[in-house]
Image (cartoon, rainbow, N blue to C red; front, side, top):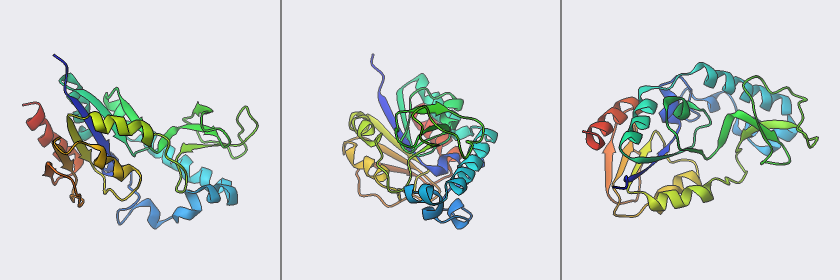
Length: 227
């Protein structure tokens, strides 16, 4: 018998309980940095050193963090379902928790790429040196989708949403587009579980809200989907 397909969209709240600060909470990263100073192509052109330092610190934080029970719980779903995770997060905590099909919409902090060619990607666990260059001679930058850049993985995520038998949203305020728009590609008849400390307003049908942090919410979800 073919397994039901679960598609999960995760946001910053998924990794918050692993100690990774979100960008939009009261103590979030944007309180210390203006988006336009560290997370845009213009920032890269203006002050490459500042941008590298910002993401070098993000990389260190990710390497120090551990998957939480929410990450591990979502990985357990693979025992019974065909699970695909589409994440807005740039960390690798889903993979370390055991999830095998993870798509990163906004890039991955543990990779770097040529500033000219987004397909020229290299692994990185250390700091990216300010003058480090790719084989094409251009500077190496974090493999992150910055504000104002295209989100190429969106086109690959849409068919997943359309094929979902069950949809789950964890830890996203749905404030960032185009990622937030993916919900509207899920069929109206599909059950949609939304897990968050504060359930975002949505204009979709068949919503089952679980208003809890990711770890508690996923534990409750598992009782429903894996009784």
